[in-house]
Amino acid sequence: MGAAVVPIVVFTAFWGVVGIVLPFVVPKGPNRGIFQVVLMLTAATCWLLRNLYTINNRETDFVDTSINTIG
Image 1: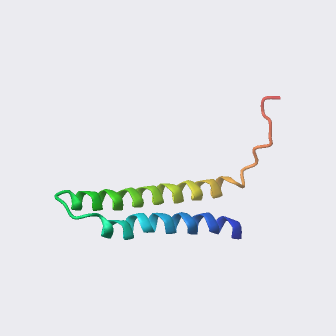
Image 2: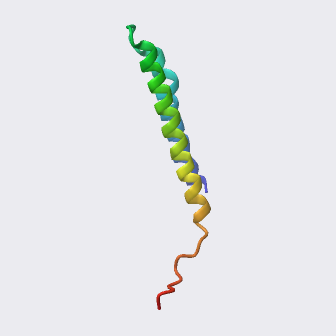
Image 3: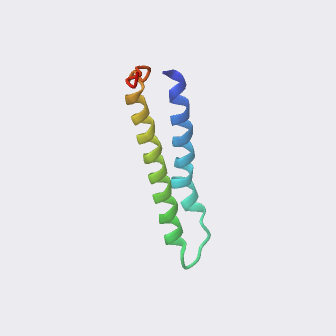
């Protein structure tokens, strides 16, 4: 269980940097606000999908798939 925490922390930190830190370093220009929103939405979406995938896999780990019903 402890090993499963490491990937979540690493991906949370990575997408936190992408969604929180990088929007502040976007160069000034006419599309700065758009680039900032794109970075924040990309980070939030990727983080959410990654965590939902992880949670879904944890819930299905207990299912016994070794039963062969075909015969």
